[in-house]
Image (cartoon, rainbow, N blue to C red):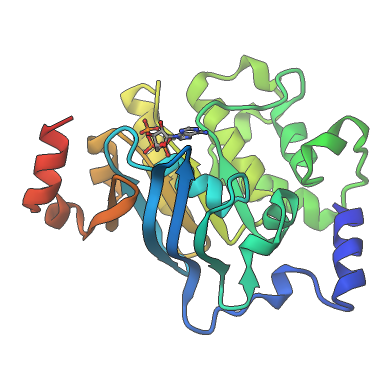
Length: 269
Ligand SMILES: Nc1ncnc2c1ncn2[C@@H]1O[C@H](COP(=O)(O)OP(=O)(O)OP(=O)(O)O)[C@@H](O)[C@H]1O
């Protein structure tokens, strides 16, 4: 991570990428008029989507609605044909590559957990401080007191304090998912994109995941893409419904579930 920060500072003396962020308008993420085509098919179609500072947003929509593509665009994996994507008012994400976007403060959790199974839970968190996974095998950090405190804090947030010394490979599926969220938290992201966090979880694990995501609200902006409607209802404040690459509806869970267009789209699935 040090190297990346230094490179950035070379371009912007005295400032890290995250320090150039302008969030004076309380909006953290701006996705505006974004279109992505795959061989002529519009996976995103003039999509506009905004996320406020510290908000927990749920994104739902039938299969193929464009949810994953939207996250791919925000994290720099897919480049749009048209539109703007800004982090705060000042950082144009379309000018940054994937590592720089992560460095600016955007963390993404994929559906399948990718923890280092042979390493202890706490070591996984330690490694995550190094940021770029490619440098993990050679990462040997001398932890400061502050960093140890952060590891303890994150272990508490993800409810794995008692598992800290166990190899990550010995954790249950749900615990691995929480560890991976913890690994993202070690980077202190301003925005967390979380893809289907409760797929394959028991009910108990789902409840715990709901608590965990709710506890992040206010400290991080969190965008959760999820198919499980009971789970979405348990955490939802504002829900965005995507359909055919655009926003079909947005509002509280009750509002979107009452919306006849949403009902039609889901019944037609
Ligand atoms: N690389 C690609 N090449 C061609 N088509 C693609 C590609 N990626 C996505 N698509 C298509 O774009 C559309 C949107 O896909 P996307 O994965 O974003 O939807 P989604 O809402 O995440 O769906 P799901 O809920 O099933 O994961 C789909 O029709 C998909 O087949």
